[in-house]
Structure formats: C-alpha cells, structure tokens
Image (cartoon, rainbow, N blue to C red; front, side):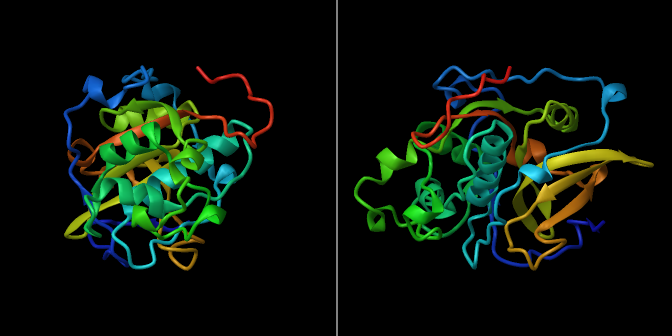
Length: 250
C-alpha cells in the first residue's frame, strides 16, 4: 500500500487545479435540481469502503494541465460502472476544452462539474482523448457528449462529507494542496487508520505512477477542499447504448 504526502510529493506531470469559482451551495451549481447537501453519516458508523473494482482505464494527462477534467472523467466512469451501465472509457480533452477558457492553464473543479452536468464529454473512441480544442472535434460532439454526463451531484463541505459520500458508495472529485500548487484527484475509498482514516484515490498520471495509477492519502493531508472544492457523484445519465436503466440511487 503506497501512502503519499502531497506536501512533499512533486507534481510529477502538469496539473493545475484552480480555486473554485462559486461559493459553497450556490443554487447555480444545480440547474437540473440536484441536491446540494449529502446525508452526513456519523464517523462512528464509518467502515472500510472502496470502489476500485469499478474503476475504468487509468487516465493520463500526458503533459496537459487537465487534472480537473481527468478526475471528473474517472469519477463518472466509476459511477457508471457502479450503477450497472456499460464500461465506456471517457475522453478528458472535450471536457477540459469547455472549462479552461481556451488555454492549457488548468481549470476549477466546480466548472468541471457544471460542464459535465450540462454538456458532458465524449467516449474515448469517438475522438482523440486529449483533444481539448472544441473546434477540432467532430461536428456532432455535443449531441454525443450528452450521453456521458453526471445527473446528480453533491457539493461537499469538508472531510466529514467526503467520508459520508464514500460510505454511501459515491466517488468524490476534489482538489487538494499538492507540493507548491494544487491537484485534482478522484477519491474512491477509505479505511480506518491509527490517526483517523486513509483515503484511496485514482490519479491521472498513467499506470506507471503509484500503484497502477492509485495511491492513498492520510486524512490530515486532505488540505485545500474548501479552496478547490469537493463533489460526490450520486447518479450518471443513461446513454443510448446502455442496458435497461437500473433503479436510480437515492
């Protein structure tokens, strides 16, 4: 088990998570009516929970500052698999292009959530997965991207909300302090530790990083959530090619 310390861990590859652009719980986050507060579960009821077996292919930013888009795509892949939908590798480029203001200079977590809720992203086999220049995508990319969106998202307020989301089986996309900057990750699990809890996360620097693209963080090292944001994915949209829709999770 690899435990990393983000305070001393260098940003192995580019990845700039920018501060969230809206205040906690803002109604404009949820244009489709998704709830903005998760049911908080007392810590005494927390146990070990991990979603790694639902994880899709490990994404690789490959030189782009696209950690925010990669973390959201990882979270959506997990949420879809958890809900019994088809395993479809997702492209981070089309999502990144919607939120980076036309430059490869990073993006905020909340803007990634909003774009993935309203527009979506493409399947990796529908485009160059790293192509973020939207005018270079296929003409019908918006129509196809609508298949791969988040439907219900919770805006999380700190560690207790993050742990509660994981206890409920929801992947968490968040930004944390990392080295001298910030980095977006997808938290997929937790387990008790002598000093609190350890949190399992999926990174976006390829399978050669960490343990096949995964690593663990100590609870005390999850710093920056209030600055950069944290969101739990409760439900994903149903794509045209998916099997009969499962019962929505509540």
